[in-house]
Length: 171
Length: 148
Image 1 (cartoon, one colour):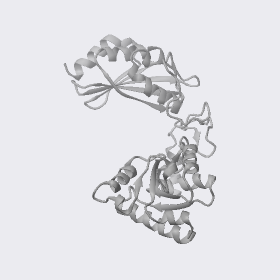
Image 2 (spheres, rainbow over the protein chains, first blue to last red; image 1 turned 90 degrees about the vertical axis):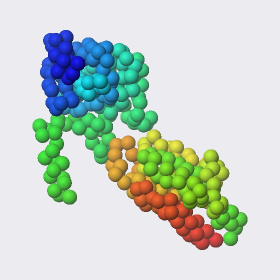
Image 3 (tube, rainbow over the protein chains, first blue to last red; image 1 turned 45 degrees about the vertical axis):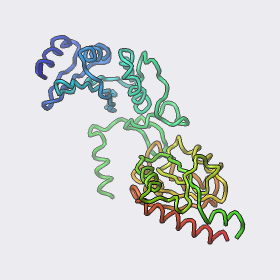
Image 4 (cartoon, chains in turn red, yellow; image 1 turned 120 degrees about the horizontal axis):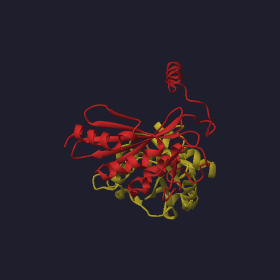
């Protein structure tokens, strides 16, 4: 059993449900899935012995990408499920329904990026302060540090690189 | 010199408040208590409640969640009370300046409650135990001189 074998099995069992299957580097496999298939793909990897190392979130222009990273320790491979939660609803099935280990990291993503995890067993606030206003998500790209609000401004195609670079040049 | 200042001038009891530090400053404070530095020879004792404390050792920039707690701890401490801001974050917020979850440096947060608070700064990331001891001694000397 090696990475190629695992990838062939994943492709065989899940092929129709994946929007994309990419191999980047010798140890990384990325599966891109639409929200309706997220739960099934996550359950498959979990039942195949994948260990959820962590989950991360990225604010993209039209969706928020929640990446579940599964380690297959014996194979030295990390398989990442990139599930898309489309704006403006940003809804995704909670993987915590399948196994409780995902509960805390999903609560954190819910706090910081505003993804709504449907069917989460315990969707309370986790890490933001008690007096933090409802519906403000500090790690979204449109978060304004002066007003502490989400401006709703669209993400620029270069993800704000030009703005940051010009600010750096100004000193 | 009134009796309150006289009581402060020797063997200050300290209370340790972490309001958002990464734990490195806290480790250095604990180092002060180990036999190598042994601040107890100066009569400094780490006490478990601010009501017994002459000095607050504050580490870290104040998070939004910790702000009311720090103010409450300061209110509970017997006055006159010296606040020692230990580490870069407690002095000036360090790399956490303007972060979304931060309420400001401890000196600002404490001055909201008591504009005349006695505040000393020990910079460093983290400061050495020697620096913490030197800062505490200097703060005490200045305070006693100013109050008597």
